[in-house]
Length: 218
Ligand SMILES: NC(=O)c1ccc[n+]([C@@H]2O[C@H](COP(=O)([O-])OP(=O)(O)OC[C@H]3O[C@@H](n4cnc5c(N)ncnc54)[C@H](O)[C@@H]3O)[C@@H](O)[C@H]2O)c1
Image: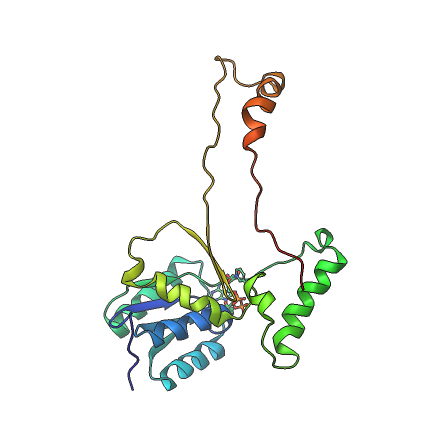
């Protein structure tokens, strides 16, 4: 049975979609009706992703290659057009993390993250606790895929340049940096003394917090 949904007739490329978040995005876009070009550097995972999508009733082909070069970009677009006749959606997901800032993490933070990430779902097959999904925004790749499918749809046609956060049950829209206070020097630029003379009265009242506040775990 062909997939039906808000992306019927659309064609998507999802880079790095052999596994992880990219796979979840590709599966969700296909479930919403889009034909998907699966891309990955790993041919085995790319082919497995195509099988998974087509077995579920979707349309997909694999284009193996490392994104980053013009050659791969042209091959991806060429594959979309050759296989499905057009290209509407590009999800530039491919990448990898280098989370090496352990020296900034307390023992409690480390234990909390490891407990939730490693023991919360994968150790025993149990769902993440509601606190982790709701307050911390922890979840699985499938939790993110709904946002990607929404942003690729006509319902989000006017949404661009936004910082949207999603994880678990938490969906957030982040503010953009914008000028809060402006003062001008008299032609010679700003010396430290001149800044200090202005700071407390003009700037300090407008200092803002940054990031997200996590409540204590129950
Ligand atoms: N997992 C997270 O919590 C998280 C958070 C923020 C951002 N991200 C970003 O989301 C993306 C996916 O994360 P993930 O956790 O699913 O990663 P993952 O390592 O599970 O999957 C990444 C996939 O991309 C492929 N890949 C890597 N380099 C490639 C390249 N040059 N060309 C084509 N394919 C390539 C890999 O083979 C792999 O299949 C990454 O860009 C990552 O930085 C992830």
